[in-house]
Image 1 (tube, rainbow, N blue to C red):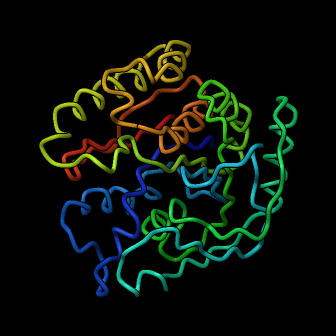
Image 2 (cartoon, rainbow, N blue to C red):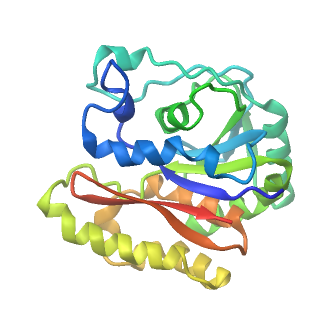
Amino acid sequence: MTLPTLFVPHGGGPCFFVDPDGGPSDAMWQPMEDYLAGLIASLPERPKAILLVSGHWEESAITLHTGTRPGLLYDYYGFPEHTYHLRWDASGAPDLARRAAALLNRAGFETREEHERGWDHGVFIPMKVAVPNADIPLVQMSLRADLDPADHIAIGRALAPLRDDGVLIVGSGMSFHNLRVRGEAAVERSRQWDEALTAAVTDDDPTRRAERVANWASLPHAKFAHPREEHLLPLMVALGAGGDGSAVRDHASNVLGWDISGYRFD
């Protein structure tokens, strides 16, 4: 069975685990946490493995983590001490990493391997919610540092065969990522951006969909929503891997005045 691909919001820092008793300390994160908690149950079958690209890892060439038991990289600042001791002990999947690299090489993309870097919070924070028992192996893949949108869509396309083998391909980022603007100053422009992005992502014509999303910078308030686009590029990979199937917005929430969306490609 072919699994869908996903673009999911990973929140802000360890937002779902700020309360030491479990759960977010601010109710605004609860809809996002609920969405992530239901991801695996929403799939047609349980994944054998996950390939995840996070907005928090960039390399000059696409790099795949080949470690068997990666540690965690607590790459956030100013949060309670207990959030620097969170655990998510899923195993890596080096064989999957190398198969993904082979698919990318065949498509003309340079790849590298890495086995020492810890999983960043774009991995372990959403996955700790989605897979709380850490019982699905995971491979993290980097973005390419040039952040070329069309190439990242093509990278996703190259990885699409993995879907037929029970691999869930996940882009982890944020559909809106301007941390400096909050509240009323963000509301209207965020709404217009989100509507335009969603219209592009869910275009019924797959070719036009890819073209519109690759040309994201022309959408209303694009650079307001993403002063730098690293948190949007995982969407390109998920969209490319999704192929010609349907595309839907399957999550909507509002955080700090930002409209936040998640997308699914079947």
